[in-house]
Image (tube, rainbow, N blue to C red; front, side, top):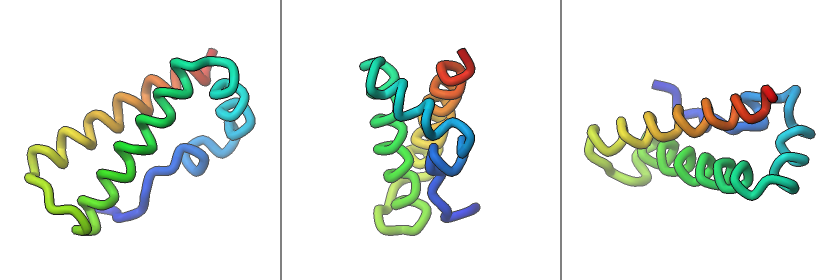
Amino acid sequence: MSNTPHDLYEDFPEKVQAIHALKAKDAHFARLVDEYHAVNRAVHRAETRLDVLSSEHESELRRTRMKLKDDISRMLAV
């Protein structure tokens, strides 16, 4: 398991400007990005053992992060 955070700007380097623009004009997209960053931080803290979570909770956070990233990716593809 990698302890490297899954930053959106690193995962979508060609979409950095689009992410900023969409965040500015679409409140729903901005909320998804903010939620993604919060969940991503929680996963990273669990992976590095800064926060001790049950394996079930950690897995649920990973699933939530994946769904958010998929939603963000779909919105960026439009």
